[in-house]
Length: 355
Image 1 (tube, one colour):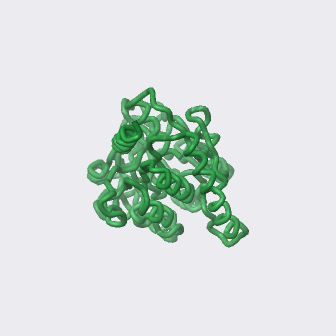
Image 2 (tube, helix red, strand yellow):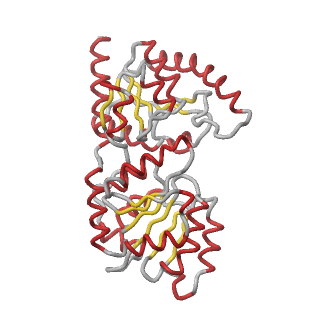
Image 3 (cartoon, rainbow, N blue to C red):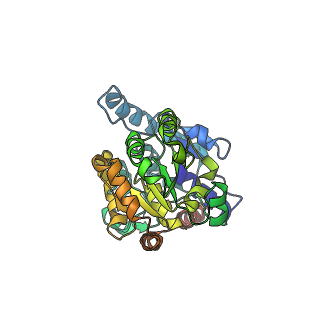
């Protein structure tokens, strides 16, 4: 959702008079997140595939099949000049319908190892944008490296951002978050590490709605002398960009957006890849870790003592600065504008042919 919306905003910035529509699935938060920003259309395919063995393993292929005529009819009604998808199973019926109707399409892949659905739609898409250079090989000449479309960090003052979170000059801020869901393993490691860590670090923990009870219990269990240096919140929404700019170290998973944002901001990070979903996050984290841009800890190795030891090393400003500089060299903060420019070129060529 968020990369798609970042591209939509870049398109609006380039051409305010564009007509844009958003297509989502029946599962997920798209309709609520998109809100009134774009007209919303829904296909019967779910936006995420099942991980476990359940009824959806049977129903998902049926929904996918039913979405194909839906997508065909939708594109016939909207008559777009280009289609953009951020991959996943939702992209399959859209790109196939676009190909059948002669509409150019652009697919974005955010992981080093492309997902199965993106590999499939990439074969019939007009162009493929990828976040990481190694991914180009999976799609051949139609691929280009765009980076990951992310929120804008333009105009954010680091001193002001740090002051807004109560970080004093000379202090260090650890920003801990697990992506869109609460991550129990991160909370467990923090529980073990915080008594050792808090004298040297302030900790801002984005725990998610489901993780707040555990985070509040953790805060209450801390020694009173350091309790005020740990703060847990369910979400930051509009202040997330400020938090990333304010942080000295980020602790989190290794999804494409997290990797892209720590690189764009230029901040040291400890990445703990999600161990499932085809090892995509392990490959993402390795891309940064191998170039000195992040510390990578395997999910089953994240314990309080390991976390405390890594943060002890990262107390050194020189170590953090070197890691942050390496991350910044990998950053592509203009990814949304890059993809928007390619989409506009595709749309202009199609509109010219149609005329």
